Amino acid sequence: MLVEKNVPLQSFNTFGIVAKALTLVRLQGLADIDTLLADAALKTAPKFILGGGSNIVLTGDVKPLVLKVEIMGKQLVSQTAKAWIVEAGAGENWHDLVTWTLENGYPGLENLALIPGSVGASPVQNIGAYGVELQDRFESLDAVDMTTGQRFTLNAAQCAFGYRDSVFKHLSNQGSQPGFGLADKALITHVRFALPKNWKPVLGYADIEKKRLQAGMDHPTAQQIYDWVCDIRRAKLPDWRVLGNAGSFFKNPTVSAEQCADIIEREPKIVHYVLADGSVKLAAGWLIDACGWKGKHIGNAGVYERQALVLVNRGGQANPVTGGEVMTLAKSIQTSVYERFGIMLAHEPVVV
Ligand SMILES: Cc1cc2nc3c(=O)[nH]c(=O)nc-3n(C[C@H](O)[C@H](O)[C@H](O)COP(=O)(O)OP(=O)(O)OC[C@H]3O[C@@H](n4cnc5c(N)ncnc54)[C@H](O)[C@@H]3O)c2cc1C
Image (cartoon, rainbow, N blue to C red; front, top):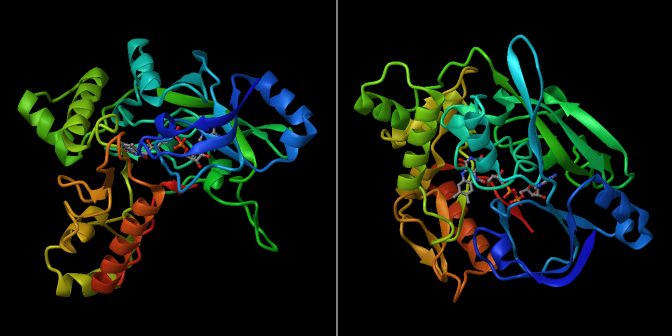
């Protein structure tokens, strides 16, 4: 177990924000976690778990102990009549895992190609893209309770997956009230995926459908969908290595059918999707764009000119955006959208 002091975090977060970890520990296996928890001072210190840093906004130096998860490994661990069960260490790069599963004949994750970050963080916000969410391919995960050292395994129901949500996004205690969450406790060490033997493509998303029609393919392979998803994402989203960002900054809000009808009366062009339960999901990017934010900026925090849902670091590595600028811009956008539509947007990244 390696304990480092005053570690620069600029290359550990995709916004490229400058901050440092006062103390950072790299965890490369369960033995490192045991060693950490055997140290009385480290065991009781407040902690922040860091994966690939692609869903965080750093607002200053990180005082809690930063646990950089570097647990590696990916393998087929078992199979059922219906699925291949693949396990990966939390420190594996997500996109590398997707690529590896396809190369080894276990399709099912292709719609989630090119999402930045680590395997360990993928259940935290139940990552999703192009019609597939992590929960659709999830089997179980292993984690450690960092307050007690206890190891445990959770199935999908126990993870309480929701839209960009899970038990790992909620605290175990809300003030004096007991909560149901594990955000302040659980470090995910391994994740297992159930990848269907009777694989069927998940199509239907407009961009993928366009690619399918262009290629004239009725029955695309998983590799084909992977290639299309990579192409679409490269065309739509800024490369964080060139223009720092954390992907979609706001969640798409859900409103009741009545609320939506009321908004449509005022804003007939609003982009919306009716969900199975009758509620309606609105496109947050459209709401932000309608408020005139696309291409605007506050300091070095900008709204990406091709997709209003993405906030970017306009200052690059040399003159990087600060977490304060990002959050000031985010709050200004929230206020505009609230004043015009009566909807409070929730941000996706974790503010540290
Ligand atoms: C360009 C771009 C595109 C994106 N596109 C998408 C997309 O299409 N869909 C989508 O869902 N997301 C997307 N994201 C967001 C991001 O990639 C995901 O949320 C990703 O899962 C974050 O992984 P990470 O390892 O970088 O997590 P971090 O940013 O390092 O951490 C995020 C949270 O997870 C916690 N965490 C990390 N690892 C662990 C662990 N092992 N155990 C417990 N907690 C942990 C952290 O404490 C933190 O609270 C995008 C981001 C970018 C930059």
